[in-house]
Image (cartoon, rainbow, N blue to C red; front, side, top):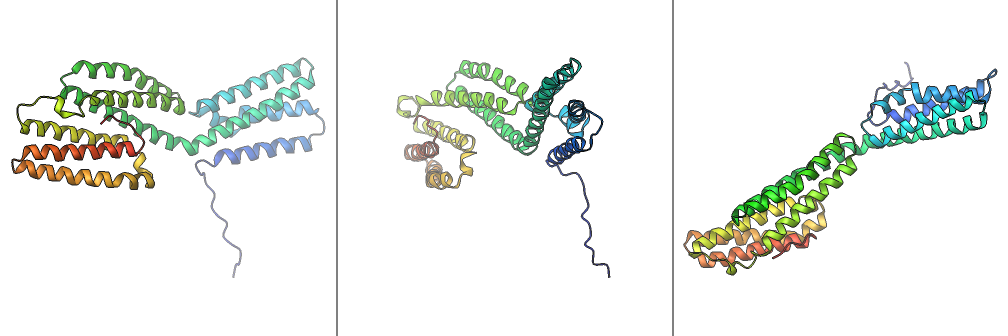
Length: 299
């Protein structure tokens, strides 16, 4: 009976190719140093770094990388290699060795940057998409509030301010600069959120508005409650993934939901005045939930 263990099958594992290539390249470089007999140290170093920076599999991966920072460092390594080659031609072995060592070190830095992105890149893309969806939701909410207040100009002005930021974010993302793209998106998010807070600020005291009857006022408060529920789903989407924050705001959300149901029942019975009071309490609990999660809104 054959007692030898079956050898594991090998294959490409995403996110692992760069470390393997780097190890192979370093071993190749070390072996060349050990076994070289008829070449000077500088000539050997030049040939080894040329193979590593120009012809290795890692170099090919870097050349196709979407990580701009990694590609920039790779170009730096190529520039250092060229300087080393020039120094070698000029007979300056000391400068040649200095440039070639720097080229190899910089090349390995580029590899690490590219490898890091293979792990964090997908998450950053997902976070970017989620934040973009949030910004679009906020813009839609702002347009809805502007329509409610019969202020179409305000909605257009916000869109004009935010759209260039969204365009810059998209361009940076396509260039592989996800961190910078997210920064632009965060600016658009903050601007949109503040715009909603500003527009809603003067409406928290409903008695400053004028309605023909309590039924009309009820429908206004119902819409305002809907808007704050939307803000909960948009502004707290990420924060509610934190268990402690979720537990802290849960009582407000539960009470707001119950009060909303009570108000709707009162309205069905024609008790609009009482329904308005209960609905205002529901909306106030939604405001408390948002503030409790660390986001200030008027109210």
